[in-house]
Length: 153
Figure 1 (cartoon, helix red, strand yellow):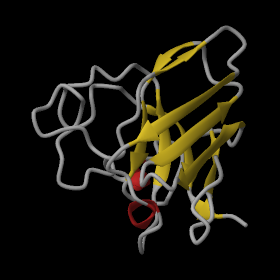
Figure 2 (tube, one colour):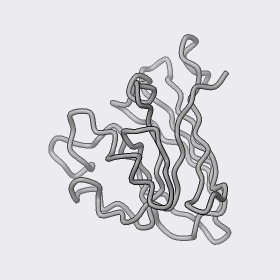
Figure 3 (cartoon, one colour):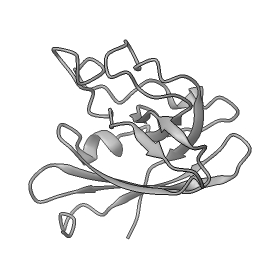
Figure 4 (cartoon, helix red, strand yellow):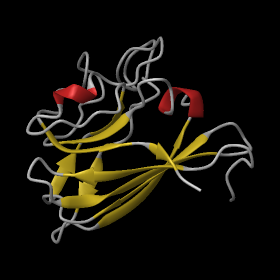
């Protein structure tokens, strides 16, 4: 499905703290009003990892804390929360041996204006799985990959 005509896709090249390429994230507004977020990853350690959109489009290594907290809107973290989930909460990624994975997510509540606001936003890959309930970030551990979103043509 093509993106909404007046809103170009936004992409983020995801890098490790060492500057190695881990893949790319793409966020596109769909005619339904739901955002489609695609992750195309390679070189991510095998296992289960949390993946979230974070509130600031800045990825300063080594810990990527510059990306701030989750893109939360007025929601709590996790699908288990009564007032959740954050618009930036994505399902865990299950990375096979070899580290390559492509996934697509339909993200209700996320808008292009949230992703491309004044200070931008980032995609973070965490070292552990998200438990979908722990506040404020699902106990997903350290940040092993980060990319900042930019508009593309």
